[in-house]
Amino acid sequence: MDFGYTEEEQAYRKRLSKFLDENLTEDIARQNWEDLGVGPEAREFSRKLAVNGFLGMSWPTAYGGKGLGPTYDFILLDELGKRWGAHVPLDVGYTMVGPTILRRGSDALKQSFLPRIIDGEIEFCLGYTEPNAGSDLASMQMRAEDKGDHFIVNGQKTFNTECHYSEYHWLAARTDFSPDIPKHKGISLFVVDMDSPGITVRPLWTMSGERTNEVFYDDVRVPGERMIGEKNKGFYYMMEAIGSERNQVFVPGRLVPLLEDLIRYAKETKFNGEPLAEDPLIRDRLAQAAIELEVAAVLADHSRWLESNGLPMSYEPEITKIFTSELEQRLVDTGMQLLGFFSQLTEDSIRVPLRGRVSWYYLHSFMTTIGAGTSEVGRSVIAQRGLGLPRAY
Ligand SMILES: Cc1cc2nc3c(=O)[nH]c(=O)nc-3n(C[C@H](O)[C@H](O)[C@H](O)COP(=O)(O)OP(=O)(O)OC[C@H]3O[C@@H](n4cnc5c(N)ncnc54)[C@H](O)[C@@H]3O)c2cc1C
Image (cartoon, rainbow, N blue to C red; front, side, top):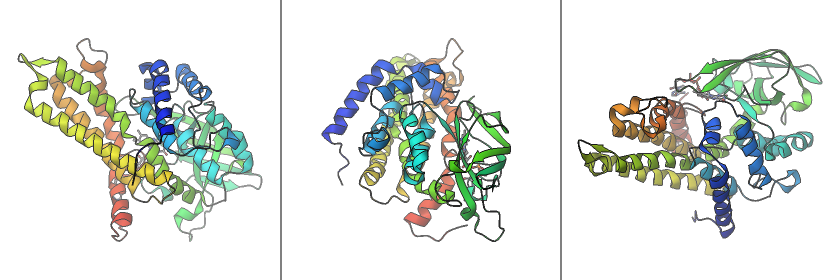
C-alpha cells in the first residue's frame, strides 16, 4: 500500500492552500461550521472556489468536473478543515447528493443539478432522520404516495440541519406500504424544492447553539422525475454512498486547528509562575493528542486509498469515523483540563482564552459521536462486517 500523493495531487494541495490562505477568513468558516446558516459571504466563497477550479475535481467532465480521482476532494476537505474546521461550504450537495445522482440519477437530473452543485450555486439539506427512525433508519414512516406523474408526501423529519437555508431537500420516504415487505425495501429517494407548498421548517437548537430543524410535510407535491433511480431502492442508494460520505466528512485535518490552539496556549500561559508548557501532565496530554491525530490521518488515508483504487470499503470508513469523532471529544477534554476554570467562559467574556473555542467545542463535541450514525451502531457494523460476528439485531 502506498498512501502517498502523486505530484499532481501535491501541486493541487499547494495551489489550494495558497488560495485558502488568501480567501478563507475565520468568519466565513464559522458561518458554515456552526450551521448558523450559510450567509452571503460563505455563498460567495463557494462560488470563488468553483470559479478557481477547486470544486468537482473528481466529477465527470460532461457535467463540468475535471474527471480526476476522489483524492482531490479529500484534499479539498482536509485543507478546508485545517482552517478553523471549515468544510465544503455547500456540503450535503457536494459530498452526498452529487455522487448519488451521478451513480443513480436520470440524465435530466444530472444535467439539471450537477453543474449547479459544482458551480457552488445550490445547497441541499439531508432528510433521513425521523422522530422514531434514527439509528434504525429503515423504520422511517414519511409517506410518498405514487399518483402517476407525481408523489404526494406527508410526514415529519427531525434533525434536518441545513433546511432553513438550503434550496433543496435530499429526502428519503416510504413508497411501499405493504406490511409484509422488509422495511428497508420500501424506501425511495427524492430531490424536493424547499419552497414547495406544504413544507414547514421549525428550528431545533443544540446545546452549543447550533441550529438544526424539524421539517413537516403536509400534502407536498413532488414531480415523479424528482425520484432518484428506481422506486423502492432508496435505502440501497443511501448505503452505497455511506462509505465515501464518511471518508469526506470525517477528515482529521479539521482537528488540527484546535490542537495548534492548545499548544500555543500552553506555551504562552503561566500558572503559579510556571509555563503550562513545562507541566509534565500537560505535555503528556498534548503529545498523546498528537499521536492520535497521526493515527486518525493514517486511518483516513487508508479509507481514501481504498476508494481511490476502486477497492471495496465495508467497515473501514466506520473505523475512521469512530476514531476521529471520539478523538475530537478526547482532544476537547484536554482543552478543558488545560484551560481550567477559564474553559467555561464563552466568547462574549472579556477574559475568555482562545476566543471561547474550547467551551463551544466541548458542547459541540457531543454530537460528533451521534450525527451521521452513532459510535455504538458503528461498532456493531465493525463487529459484524469486520470481525464476522453474527448480526445482533
Ligand atoms: C446536531 C445533529 C445534527 C443532525 N443532522 C442531521 C441531518 O442533517 N439529517 C439527518 O437526516 N439526520 C441528522 N441527524 C440525526 C442523526 O443522524 C441521528 O441523531 C443519529 O442517527 C441517531 O439517531 P437518534 O437520534 O434517533 O438516536 P437513536 O437511534 O434513538 O439512539 C439512541 C441511543 O441508542 C443507541 N442505539 C440505537 N440502536 C442501537 C443498536 N442497534 N445497538 C446499540 N446501540 C443502539 C444509540 O447508539 C444511541 O446511543 C443529526 C443529529 C444531530 C444530533
